[in-house]
Length: 212
Ligand code: FES
Image (tube, rainbow, N blue to C red; front, side, top):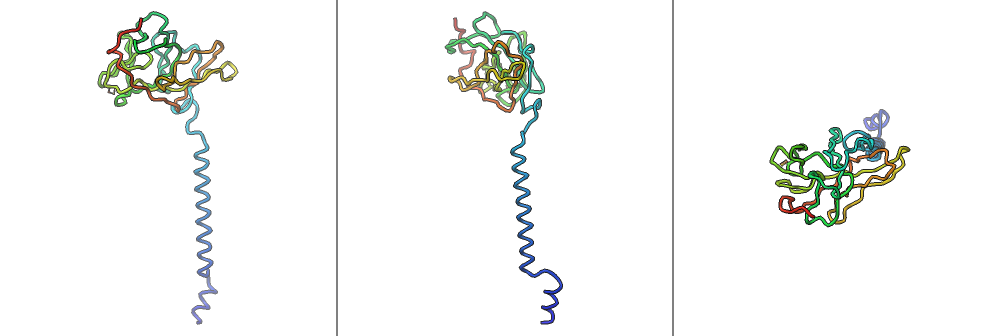
């Protein structure tokens, strides 16, 4: 009896102890939940980091059907396509019903096993050094083993004040981002490397003739 009295006078009762443990647990849970909420709410990537948006002045966009321009930090190529103009870099195949005109941002990673391919000017196409896949200027497969067309990033065209003029549209035939015809007063393009659309897997171009 004397022992029990001493125990209750000297410190916490069992009920108080459990109450404080419960309070501490709730505080910890609330802190964790708040931290998670803030983590989700913050943007994942800053502008100019891969995964974020890259601003490209319109004067850095290549001329129509010219060799592509690479942006190493953003891991994309910019290409400017026009199959209405005769050339060897970009042409329309017999299974493509419409001309292909506009600007694309093409991911720099091969769709086979992820090597970094390059533009080979002498052959006027992209070629992968690992297993030999080849792609046309817009990223469509010429030769396998690549399983699909190169992936594409979405693009926004903005004017000199930053006002949005146009955004990438989806090609209903392939579900890829379609080439964007730049509005007249475009000042820069915003390439969103956090918004990548997988390429489709149409017939290899080497099996098709050019459309006339
Ligand atoms: S990784 Fe490019 S062909 Fe294999």
